Amino acid sequence: MQSGKIKHWNQEKGYGFIDVDDQDEDVFFHVSKVRLSQPISIGQSVYFNSKRNDKNQLRATEVTSSSLSLEQDTASDTSKYIPNNAERNTHHSSRSLNHSNRNSNRSRQSNTSNKRSLGSTLFSLIAIIAVAIYFFGDFSSTLSQYTSDNTSQVATTDTATTSITGDAQVDKTIALIQQGGPYPYPNKDGTTFYNREGRLPAQSQGYYREYTVPTPGISHRGARRIVTGGYPPTVYYLTVDHYDSFQRLQVP
Image 1 (tube, rainbow, N blue to C red):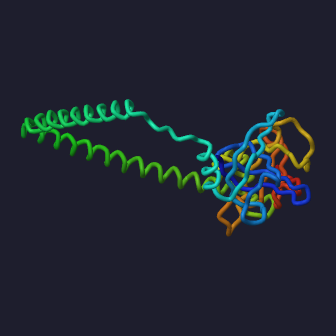
Image 2 (image 1 turned 60 degrees about the vertical axis):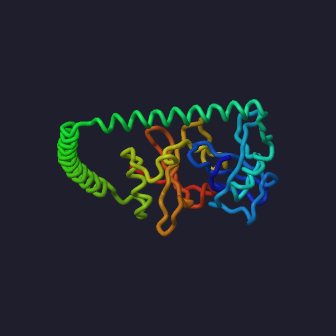
Image 3 (image 1 turned 135 degrees about the horizontal axis):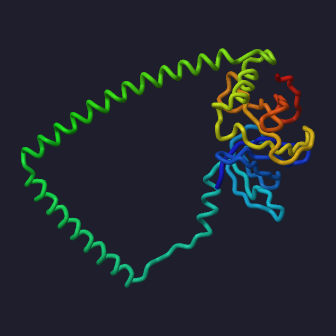
């Protein structure tokens, strides 16, 4: 069972793609495999099972809005194993032996603990205090240095961001691409864009990469992306409607 969100949906043709959680490759699905309690929409969270076809393409075999139904289907195909009397007796004897061994171990540990001297206990306490003082002193120094470095990095990033399109989020994403991150969605940003819709000029696989442009006011990735061509990028495209259309950007 996997989870993800509807990335593309073609109502007229009855197919779409799922943006899989923690996976770069999208999954194709057809309306005949969908069991949802509400109409299909882009950004909708779904659960699904998938397998590869004879062309090595991932296709969903079932899509639903709840993981429970998939788990119930899987559980119904699994037969229950009932142990026989001999196995139950063996298991019972093993548990009794383990219980006896645990009691014996606890008794020995208790005797050992009682034999500890007061001097050993004091020595351990002093050692712990010394390690704690050293650790917290070093931690304080490291935290101070980390805060200083981060403040410097943020200031450098803000200064380096220049106005290219007039949209602050788009310009910031372009700056992050040019400096190599860090990206808001590290598991998704910088992954291969497959150009399945055919909106961009045909290129070899791996030529295009996509990056998320955050949309203020929403809690998910939204529909805005920057797609670059080449590595390092030599061409930039902006889509604000989740790959339905693209605008080429003039990036210096």
